[in-house]
Length: 112
Image (tube, rainbow, N blue to C red; front, side):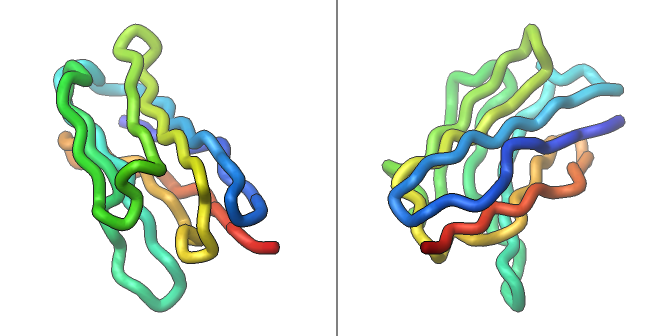
């Protein structure tokens, strides 16, 4: 079972990034997927969730209207489109499967 995140980096406030998570080793289409983030000195925070078929999504209040989670069950990927980024979005972002798998994380830094 493996989850591999990509797409992190440094961006100015107001900018956009798209994170992607590639899954392997399990039946991806059977499980809901989530994106979490953890900023230095803070607890890990649930950012967004998507159901197994992609019909249902939910977001933390702090990112609602700015972030969009999506998935492609044919490609075994789940993405997080992040727009209007703020410095407080700076964190390591993790992909998680409802099966219990975690990715290694990808750093997102929002700074001028």
